[in-house]
Length: 168
Image (tube, rainbow, N blue to C red):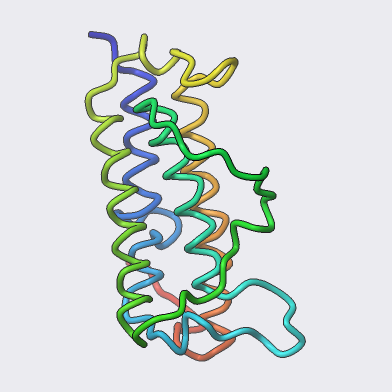
């Protein structure tokens, strides 16, 4: 079973959430983030909150999983990219944020299991018309890295992330 492409994909997927490489992974960027920090926005409302970024990442991971498994989602109006940055969910304080982080971790892990079982033929298989699995998943982990950088910047601005890091 040829796995050159999928091994590279697997490595990128692991680095996006679990393993530090040139940048901290998303899991590390979310460690210790409180409900209050998740909903903090810099003055001027210049960007999305940490929670809104996480909801956005969940949306696209679950979208891939639904397409991969052929899950039909109820007909709904077209959702814009902007709509995927949802604010806090009403409910018990603390529980909603912890549930959101868990949902992200679970979606990421489910896709990781798919990648683990892939061979290069599946990498090139269309999940939907003209959307091969491998390139789609590569875009997802690059997307994670992009938003992870935003999350870390938000944490630096709120003082919950060290402004400098050292490497051995």
